[in-house]
Length: 305
Ligand SMILES: [Zn+2]
Ligand SMILES: [Zn+2]
Image (cartoon, protein in one colour):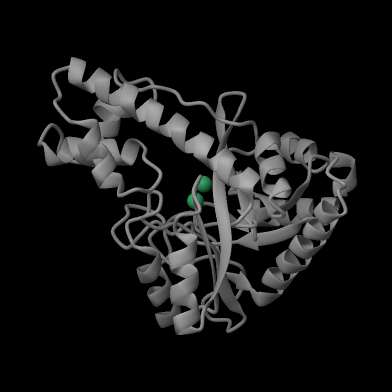
């Protein structure tokens, strides 16, 4: 059964054409399945294309690409960047970014450094409250991926300080709770620029979670090229609204499950909100054009359109 509020494009799941899940996470960030596991599952449910879009890291891409080649599944290199827009968290997806791009790697390294600094401060705060967890253990739990609050939560559960990750967030590390620390974030426009400079296609992720049409209008001249129209949290009304905006601004309408793993409390249905291969072709075409523009040295935002 689909979860409350979830919506998939007409025919998704039944329709053979809906074979591309363009938004999945792995253990490289806060997903609970490894890149290889996610690819294997995608094959088993009949998907043909999968975009691995971990938070602020490309670590999951190479293993996913390799497994995809072995199992004949197309893997799209992607990344999901968390940004701040007037105090609200806005996510920007970058599709077909050049995974060898030096500028992208240094931006992501900066992101990871700020994550690490933030986690360090939060562990200190927790220690000061008598909750003895170590930074080393939190990093081990993160397994070399993007370290963040879910990993602190697991360390707290492991030590028996809380019963669940939800409790850890509710008592200590959620926004406004005593061990919470904010972290540096880009603005959405900066994230769009990071994606475009790496030759990728910038797409606004799940806009229905923090609706702001003004932001979309603002990001189009900055190089935004798509909206994630189909997402498990979007209602049918949101889907029609964002489809309309895609038509209005000439943006590609993408979709994906935002899968975080079988055992995740939400977003645990791989293949939900999958889209047709036509969308993948549109993204590939845009990425090709973006790379050509980059090669031609036209890096000014005016040249994006
Ligand atoms: Zn997101
Ligand atoms: Zn996501």
